[in-house]
Image (cartoon, rainbow, N blue to C red; front, side, top):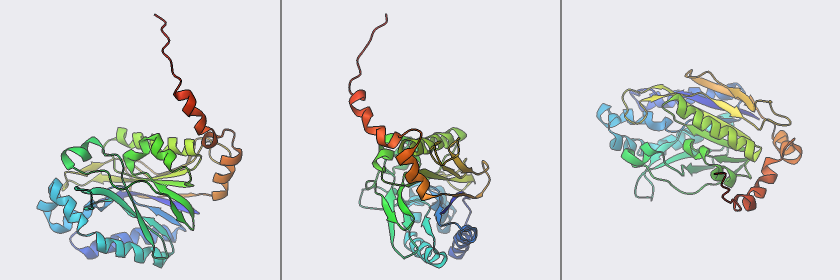
Length: 292
């Protein structure tokens, strides 16, 4: 299969039709390059807040609700495009008003057969907690698709090994991200590459790029697309299948053979996924040893 990960700029939108045209072009471009799986970034849907006007887009609280109110037509658009092009799409995540008291950060996954599901972010960053007030949503899940088993770790979630391990059945883990600084980008990238190493799977990271001066939540973003695997049998020695150019918008592509994932898990130079459980008793037997 071919995976496409987006380095996606947020735009000021003057109309819903402008958003439809933008997403249709992005999906069409990737599908035209033969992509089977498309990954949009975390909080990429925040550009929809501009449709409610400058005051709403600039307000942390109101911008969330303005985006959440638009999600039903967003779902219909992505379902239509997934079916039209015969692709799987992880849509850009959005703050969604769910049954959690406060908005959750939710990414929706669309299959070409019209079926969709969603993944909520699990662990909030400091900014999401305060002042934004976004909360953790429903638990992790593995999507069984025609492309294989796919999981999603939204940005900060990728930095936690046990969340990655919970997706051990996934062949591919998608990592949509939104990072302000270069250090944030590298934290998520290191997390994505680490999860690929531990689970002996492929991870696909997408990013918001550029400035959105009309927003308090996504005012500036640093990143690029990247697709990673274990640095082992059947994969590049660096573990990097493909990476974009920092700050440059567009798609990053990589061809991924599901058989290579199965092979490295069964007969890699190392067997991280299999040997994971050997940590547990050893990690519990730590003792203090004074050299004073």
